[in-house]
Amino acid sequence: MNPLDYLVLFGTMLGIAGYGIWRTRGQRGLSAYLKGSGTTGWRTIGLSVMATQASAITFISMPGQGYQDGLGFVQNYFGMPLALIIVAAVFLPMFRRWNVYTAYEFLGRRFDTKTRLLGAGLFLLQRGLGAGITIYAPAIILSTVFGWPLGLTIIFSGLLVIVYTVAGGNEAVSQTQKYQMMVIFGGMAAAFVVLPARLPVELTLPDALHLAGTFKKLNAVDFSPDLHRRYTFWSGLIGGLCLSLSYFGTDQSQVQRYISGASLREGRLGLMFNAVCKIPMQFLILLLGVLMFVFYQFEPPPVFFNQTSWKAAAERNGGKFHAVEQKFAAACAQKEQSLRAWLDARRVHDSAAETRALAQTLAAHQQSEAARAEARAALRDADIHAQTNDGDYVFITFILAELPHGVIGLLVAAFFAAALSSKAAELSALGSTTSVDFYRHLLKREAGEEHYVKASRWFTALWGLVALGFALFAHLQENLIQAVNIVGSVFYGVVLGMFLVAFFVKWVRGTAVFFAALLAQALVFSLYFTLNISYLWYNLIGCAACVLFSILIQAMDFKRPEEARPEP
Amino acid sequence: MKSSGTPAPPGPPEPRVDTEETGLRGLRTWRGVYLVVFGLFVLWVALLTALEKFFS
Image 1 (cartoon, each protein chain N blue to C red):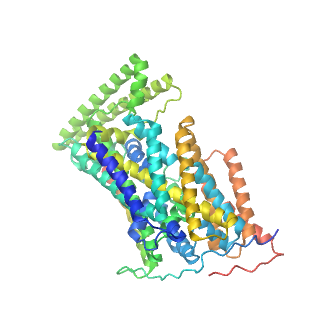
Image 2: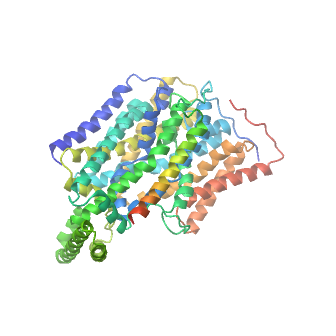
Image 3: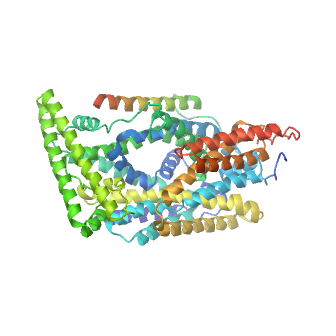
């Protein structure tokens, strides 16, 4: 990165944060602080919902995912449009009608206090545990590549997000997310413009796609019912529906985004914007990775994309690493030669030569992949704890090597913008849930608006510092990232079950759903420790168990019929 | 087992009343909006499937 890149990076980050603080200056009321000004339009809501979901890892790692595995990952998002339709049709009108600050406040008004606190507690537990990841994950990649001190990167980005989220509350989060998403779109668009221009002149876009198809990188939809395959249409549709419904319907970091709309219409259109745009957006990010794969068939890539780790290990074990590099370079050269022959054959429509050249290309590709496997094994031999998946480093390697200065700064700014936007929404949600569902409800019931705004600010700052602390010490135990993802899936299903009962099973009361949620959570825990299935399925199991147990417990409680709570 | 727990204190004062208007020309009901969104999802899946078939 040169001074121009740093100017773009810091100018963008500080400018957007400063705008968020300026835009929300003089904010006094609790409603304005936690829900915004009440004038938010659908475009801001739509971008805000998108920015909350898309963390920096989405933009750093997803192109690498496309590079390695092709478009198949897009199926993970197939359940999202359906989930967003359900949220817009059922969840959002209910949250607005009950005029709640948090999703869990709705549980309290529909059921009772203990059910509300259980829902809020599960949210705080799961989000609190993952609080540092959205800062730590991009910081570790960027600091590795650029040689920045990891602690300083975490502290700078962490403090920046704390300052504007604490100062401006929910409105600042929404307003900054709008511009952060524009930076992200700008950065990704720049990469899309530059990448095709870096492909060989004689390679047309259809040629590039044909080549990607030959390497099975365009296999986007797999209708196989095989449960063991990681990404299929069915797992994406069913598992994705359940996960997206939990996330968009019950996670306060998302609920806070769309209940702040000026009207029901604005909230619904903001959600529909995401239902329409998310799959094409994820497709384009993955396609970027696929086109990078094509690019690196003509330009030799590094044998291992995390060059910092590779070079450090190579310095200690020179001979072995050098031999692997040579083997890889020879396979790449052979591959490029075969591909040039394939292109020549395509130009003269010689299908026999085309087939022959492609077969040679695939053989050379197998050799280069074997060399990459040897490289990973060598890294593992040198250091048993070495991270051997280099997918996260593919896009950043391409950016640094191939993009012009200024655009590099813009893309790094896009990564930070994504990290800050999702972190800000998390902090705001953690702060508002702590202050509304616990502090105001249990500790200090009668106080003025300014007192609660002040309390919310303190809680948001506190959660920010917890996140910072977690991010600073996360490197002590790297598998924590995986653990946090699992914790999320273990809790999400039960919380969704509580909300589904609240919406659709009107005769079930608070005590039944409270004990059902505890039983369902115990069941999920016991299955987690005894079964060996993908953690995605725990969303479905927890949700189904909570709904079923609620109905059974309420049905058994026939001696004490209770009047239903009146709807507003 | 008791059928209800401690009642929650009242939330914000007035429940909100929203209109059901979409404000979209040609799509006057939300059911219509949802159908269009679902249709676009089906179209995306079809296009992705076609992309694979066309370039494989």
